[in-house]
Image (cartoon, rainbow, N blue to C red; front, side, top):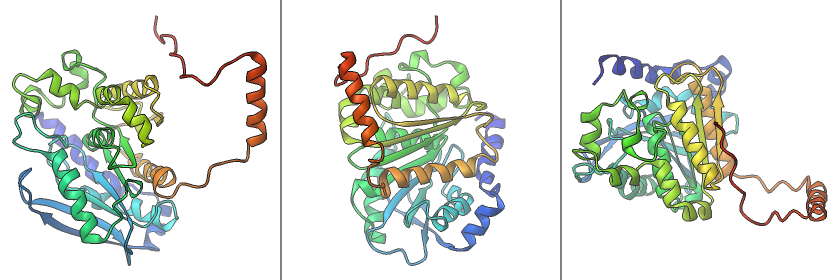
Length: 335
């Protein structure tokens, strides 16, 4: 562990306090129920601490938001973003739902190479069914989304891309991904905060290249392009352009891979935002609002421009443009 890393990332847990007064006022109009419990499992170190947040009087068939904490965080992460979530409920930006954060330590939300810890299996096969049963939630993918910050963003990206049959949408905020398709190509500047012993404990000693690629979001998008695209999973990426861990480089890389693979997504590069700081609560609120509009409560299709679209399509036919095939690749962006 790099000494300054824990000090830096521990401030992520305090970022939720940096809310604007209008968020706090909106949240006061509809306080939620915050509870902490534990769940036994044979897949991971047990019991797993779990914090949930729900509106008062949440009815049956509600949606689930799996909200994953960052590195050096724990289930207490949810409490620090409570006001942002409650403000979204109060403003009608987020459907009444259950938000759940398990304590996953620094697992990367991964099934370890040696099988000693199976966090992906635990989350998908145990935690989600448990939450649906315990709170009477909807079992549909259209009512199940995953979001996370930093390590949690990496987990959200991997879980969503691997399991589009489970999740209707994912929001990966400043996800801890590297700009590479091979572990051998990962640069120190994009992985200095982890270190070789940490990586090898999760991906094998030495790192198993095939296993790393099978769990790298960019490689997953390429290998499973057809299934991901056909699923229609809603994908949201967010990162600041001043990220202290250079995660803006990995997120930009993932965006370009998704673009090249014709996997629809939304990507937001925030000018002047870093990995920590006061930008995070409004970014979380925006991401949850986006998932609500894209997955949980999508509006009817916008037909207001039908006449204009018909005119443009006619123009394409006159010009001899066949726009029915896949989008051609873009030219290189660097010489």
